Each structure stands twice: as C-alpha cells, then as structure tokens.
Length: 473
Ligand code: BG6
Image (tube, rainbow, N blue to C red; front, side, top):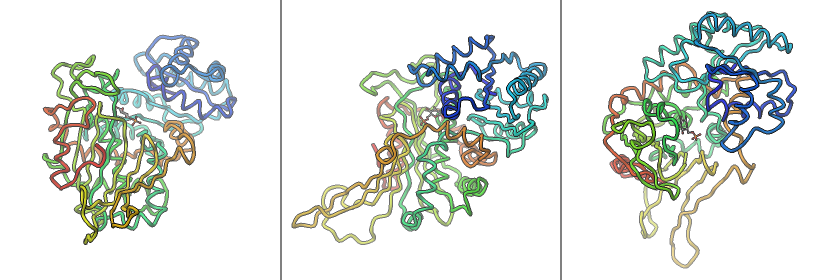
C-alpha cells in the first residue's frame, strides 16, 4: 500500500524500484495498492503511472504495463476519515482474498511530513497496524522539522506500530558506496589502524549539487539545506565515518554505535556554522536565476541553500579532530565525497619546493559520481634529484563491476526481508535533530554565493582558521 500514490516520488522512484524487484518473477504474489486523493479510475492510474514512470523521458517498458494491468491497483482515500480507513481495510482484504495472498502488508508513506499523523492514526484505528502475516511501515524523510516534532512523530508511530515494524528511509544508506564504508573500515586493518586522532588531521564531508530548487519550491523554502540534507544524509555519512567497531553486523549493534557518535558531538558554536543562498550565475554552460528569482520562491526568502559546519566529536578516537561538513544547491558540480586528511610527517627532510611544500596523505571516498576511492600518496619523481610528486591510487566501482544499482530497490528488498540495518532508528532521528536543532534559529541567510561557485567565501575561512582548505574546489 502506497500513500501519496499520485506523487512524483512514487512514479519516478518507487514503482521502477518495485519493478526491479518483481521483474525476475512477474507472476510472484506481489500486488501494489496506490492510494491518493485524486479521483481516478484504476485504468487511468495505470496509464498515469506508465507515462511518469522512471526518470523523465523514459516510458514504462511493455512488460511493466502487462504486470501493472494485474498487479497495480488504485484507491481514492479521500479525506482520510475513519470510514475511509475501514473501506481501505476491506479493499486490502478483498485483494488478498481475490489473489490468495499470504497477508504480508507493507505500508509506504510517500507523503509530506504533516500528513503522517492522520494516516498513522487512521491505520491504527482501523486495525491495520497488524496483519495476518507481517506488517511493516516505511516512512520517507523528513522525520519532523525539529527535535520536538520528531519526538511527537515517533510517539504517534509508536502508538500504533512497534519500532521493529518501522523502516525510516534515508536513501543515502541504500547507496552501495555508503554501505561500503563499513566494509572499507572494518574489513581492512590497514585503514582502521590509522583511523583516529593520532593519524587524522581533519575530515571533510561534501554533498554538492549542481541542481537548483527545481519544482519543489513549496517544500524547499519551508525546509532549507540544514533540514533537507544535513540532519539526514550528511549526519549519516558522518556516523558511518566516525563510529566505533560494532560487535557484529546486527542492525541494532550497528545503529547503537552510530547513535553514540551523535551523542558525542559537541554543541556547535555560532562561528562554526556558515549559511548561504545562491545568487544568479552559470552552471552547465547556462545562465541560472538566483534562488529568490526561482518560481514559487518569495523574493525576500532567507532560506539557506548552502550550509557548512565545523563539528567536534568528543570521543577518545576523535577528540581534537575537526569534521567539516558542507552541502549546497547550484554549486560547481554534483559531488558527494568524504575526505580523510592524514597528519603530516613529524619531521620533513625532503627538499621543499612548490606549494604546499609538504603534502599530507588524503583518502577520498567517492560516494557519487565516480564511485570508489582514491589514496593520494607522495612518491619520488624519477630523475637524479629527489623531487616529490603526489600520485593518486584509485579504485572505481564501475571499472570493476559495471554500473551500480539505484538505492531504492536495495532498500525495498531489505524491507521485504525485514532487515532494518539500513534504516534510521527512532533514537537516531532524535539525536540527529538534537545536533542541528540549536542551529535552526540561527540560519537566516545574509551570505550569497553565485550559482556555479563552491559556496560563500566564509566556508573557506571556516577551514582556514585551522590552517586547512577544502580538498576539492
Ligand atoms: C533528497 C533531498 O533527500 O536528496 C534533495 O530532499 C536532494 O533536495 C537529494 O536533491 C539528493 O540525493 P542524491 O542521491 O541525488 O545525492
């Protein structure tokens, strides 16, 4: 059951991801009931979904249309009254009986956050939080707008569902390269033994986008980059980079270690946060309007489209090592990476030439694009003199394995398998809000940066204070 069935996310991401799962066996006992407010006939819904299927310009494949004719259903859920939910319960039982399904149910809430509460209460009141088989709930971020609303949402969820039934999606956790962080760190003694304050100078986490606000003005202007990206994706990357070794791969053991990282983050000082908003400029060879000139954005909006932070994690492993996080829209390119910059050798006896004279080793974990990693090391340039040059050893997923799967099919497969490892637990949501919550009141933007640049100059100074600079632009 998919709430928000007529939304963009469902047509573009969810239905194609589901199709990836059922394609090997289209006759499998999997039925999708899309729920939406629009009055539509079932056939009308199927052709709407076929037209919007996947990324723009990619029509639904013929085998999908054949599958959808039998397996994709639609129900208008109207104003979400108790009678609506009773009708829904009857419809579900009808589909299950008609197709002899085992009664495993998955409710996917592809809805804006304010709509969660009424749906959860409606499902609970209609007895739909239990099923003849398993019953699972999938929620899309954002999980609240601040700490208080996140707590309230968790309370509403837990009134009806047990935490073990709940799968909160942060799609970054479904990316192969993000999952590989654990393998990279805990299957390679080489890196784990230098992954600490003795050897690491600082860590940078960048999630840069060249896209602007696109067609999401209403959502984005109320949200901003801190809520949209930092509270979720960037803190997830931070947790996986900084966490201790879990006792096993058990979902709760991994998530316990992640939450400990959030708990150890010191309150962020005002001078350690930079907020910016894009002004007009050029990206991809085209002139782009300022954020405030985008369709649907108030001309005097002070919503941040860029955030840079300096975080300190007070643990034995990380005390004194700054973590720099940045994210923004309309930047110079699409780039998600984690850079671990190691300390310089304590004594340097090679001739100094060029700038900088000493280069520290860096490990760059490329989340996207160009998924893989790079290790920058110093070598001697061949010749009679001792002259050093930096070389980058690299590994690329696509060279080794071909293109990577999208995050959504992987996450859906885990929901069906009942494995919550890659989903965000209730306390993880609340702790991540605890980190960003004090910043929410401080982020009214005054700094502008040109579209196509790498953000405001203040973000460069944020690292400059510690004698560092961002490794990429
Ligand atoms: C979403 C944000 O969660 O992540 C978007 O709401 C953002 O604003 C997107 O564009 C980025 O995801 P990806 O996978 O393209 O890095």
